[in-house]
Length: 285
Image 1 (cartoon, rainbow, N blue to C red):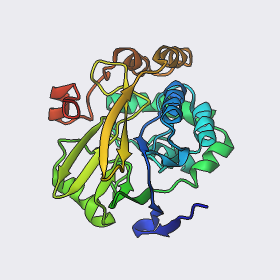
Image 2 (image 1 turned 60 degrees about the horizontal axis):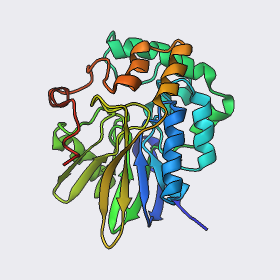
Image 3 (image 1 turned 60 degrees about the vertical axis):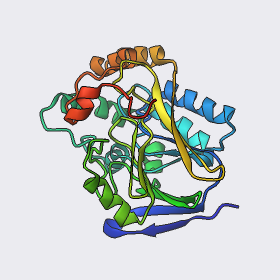
């Protein structure tokens, strides 16, 4: 029988401490209401014989795509774990916007005024209530290292943290959680950075491609064979169906097109380094 500890930290943050986790672990973020991508990820976990309780989402299960209720239902049936993303935080409080921290009046801000009300209208009361049980953070011991999941960073759920973000920003989350490894989401790009025996790891998101001109999406795997190790992985899914459903529901065409092109409609949220790269060679050899 599995036991875990729930405790509350500053500002009433709820953290679930799972104790020791062993075996392969799948990490992913941003399902974004993309049912087809979630189905493909579950098939990968099944094929690799990774139990649902060893599959962790960094939040934003709901987002830009066309099947929010179906996605929540499948996620719950699967039994994977998730922390809360800014989208779930907004939805469960009945907020009028996604809380993504987009600049007011920006192109992303305009699009959010289309997809967020759509998701809000499609979700059942039971799904909204389920979001209330999601913790802000999950922590566990893995191969002798303390791992903590955050969405943006520990103290700001919707802060965009990229590889180029100064280490001093990342360092605060390590300090405030006493962690060796931070697993983060929100920014939409897979990357890692190591410094002073600390690892910041963003596994990427599965609901949208990573602005590299390819339709694949990203996740990461932790392993504990003799020592702590990690690796990013990508997969293909039925993106054409996901695109068609978005178009049929009248969701932002620019986001629907991204599923086909692998390129973001705009790069407003990206720092200059990430805009310039438009690729992922910092996680690939």
